[in-house]
Length: 456
Image (cartoon, rainbow, N blue to C red; front, side):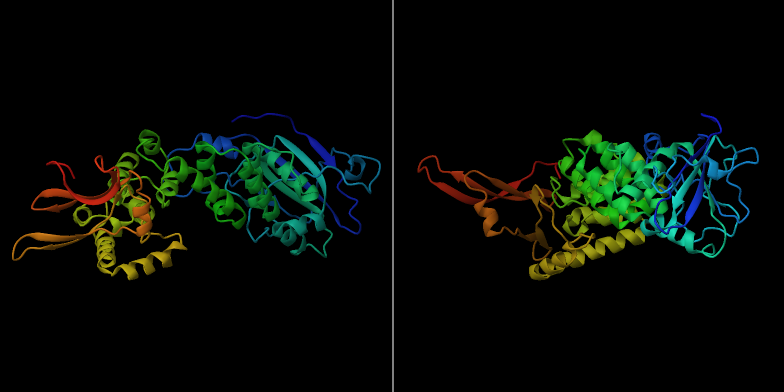
């Protein structure tokens, strides 16, 4: 346990709000203990994420008691400790975090999950209830819930030392609508404090400031791995959307950053797989990558099945996988058999739909987060194959190319289909735009190619 500082009492006057009721907030600063760190320290030591991070720093106590004494018996009276001669002027605004519970307690302390008994420092602040209540539903409930008509004017808030700076910034914002913090680590700490205190305006401010900063893979992952209560906040959605878009754009060619992508946590993989613009050969390649990543990150079969079934399967677009690969899905032990059967059956039903119906299903899902019927920009275009066994083994292969796609091949472009198989041999279709060497005219052609044995 690291303890810094001495017992310290600071009184700041925040009166001067005409007609307001003055309250005294005592801020108890707890010593630094393992697990009670800032958001950046917490992220720096984070391990692989298998599910949404919970509030592991959900610490502190809130005490509201009619007989609470702000100062000890050997301390001067609080009125003698007010900073400044003019009581009508607002002082510096400072306070700390509180949980997002509807209950403020029945006079006893309600813990945030950490039991820290040693108080390093104590700050006593005068606060204006109308200002805080106007910005925070938490404080509104606190000041109006059972104490409006009482003589109680004391609130004790217990926090960890690492949260002090963020909480002071938060109260400053509630008085001035501005922050002095401008760097990502400090803004994230204030964002966490604003979430606990239910100060939505500060959350929006922090989210906007963070979006204006340069994004990096580390910062993007940090935004996506915030505690689930923060991620669900409407004010944070633009920030997480920007982080997802950044990761999807940076790693759209997964083969170029293979090792880097393989080391990403679950939140990063989800962001990449949700993109329509992945530069992948086919959806078969996406499926193979997901299995490879899951086996590396989650060696235990039970955990791997849970992650694949509950988190990653929704991002694999099974309807665009080849039938050959779908057969392998049915026998893959990484998926629960019932779940795999459902995914394959859904994919086959989609493949059996006429093209106009497929486009309708894709359009219906394009506006949602579930985009399993939306085709990606594959390097190898999907084909529809109808196989016949009689009177002889044969197949009919359909490759859809729009007019504009053919136009875009000019002057020397090529597009290839996914492989299909007949009699154990792999084939593919291709469309080329070439210049005839003799006539110097451009020509367009469709071709059937044969794979070498063992490929595909």
